[in-house]
Image 1 (cartoon, rainbow, N blue to C red):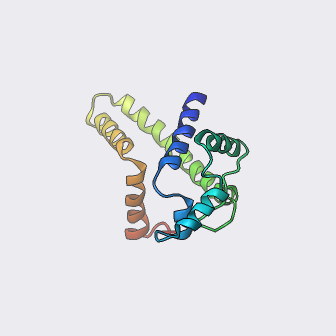
Image 2 (cartoon, rainbow, N blue to C red):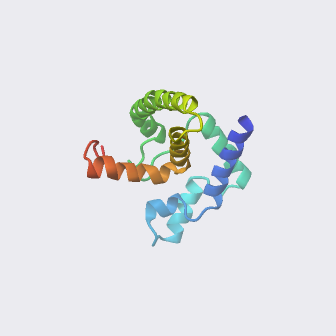
Image 3 (cartoon, rainbow, N blue to C red):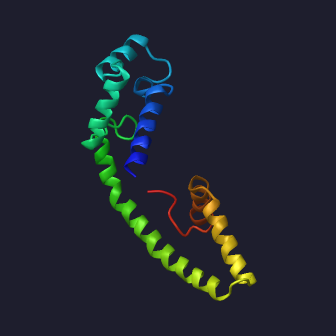
Length: 157
């Protein structure tokens, strides 16, 4: 597990390091003055060698210093934004677990008692189908259904 986490952290850093654009593009927009962009890159240590930047990234990661927001609320620490949204995230996760685990157990018991029947095959097909749909696809579709069409849930906020 620590090896996988280390690989993910490294890949995340490399993508940010070699990816197109940077914070200067976010701050200044697409048509920016190169001198101002160079000043920002120098101020934030982005002209330092790769391994110096990676070491600083690891230090900040270990101390939960994720920097400041450039988009949502400028100059607010990202850890504050995470902490602000953490309670609702935990509530949603708990609700999903409290709904998903008993449902899975009940469906598993039904499938086991009706092994080989159309009900068993239907349960297995449905669960495999649902698990195969990426969350990034399922979430907007479910939002359109439950918030847009049925109006059972709020669309935002």
